[in-house]
Image (tube, rainbow, N blue to C red; front, top):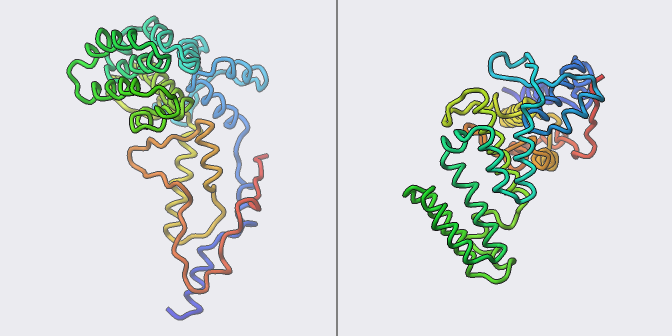
Length: 302
């Protein structure tokens, strides 16, 4: 292929910012769909108050999306959200025993059939005792509660030993910076509690859908908005790998979405890039480089 043919081929693989904005403006996204996506997010995250407020303001009935028909919202009773909401709040407040009580009141089988999650929640209680410098109570709790729950599982018992190792430190900062503190997520309490609340939320939803503890179906537990954002990032990465140039969601925006719990690094099949993929530069490509992210238009659907 001669130079002019190569240039034409490359130009055909470039989507200008203006064309991208025009395509977004032309996209037909029904407002009802947007409302349902937001409601689905609140419902699956167990945000009862937010769901009720959104229902009043938008006149949108409480719905969620399920695996049976991925495009058809399913009506739900907001009363189903109460256990998730209470458990989530208890975890965020550092009251892990209250969270365990809420789950057990809903159905003791949820934690009994998920020994790893059950152990993790009680390990978090042990961590609370250790950080409160309640040494004797922590030792007794580990011996009387966690060891039996570990049931000889070396991996679970090892994480308990990591918590007990924190007793070596009298300074919280030193504990956070230790290898055990970093392994336990001690340096980011908010994220650690978010992760625990998310696991409880997923376990409750799987149980309510009649799924076995080992079954994994993200369409049951993950908001559709979350899954669509994952799909967007995966597809834009694949387009970039093919050399297509187009305006894309950038690293800072991805971080914001993760901070808002819209994205998780838990996809079993796709590797999440920490920043947008950048194809190797080729001679003559300078004029087609994508502009800076802050100049990117963000049109809202009509």
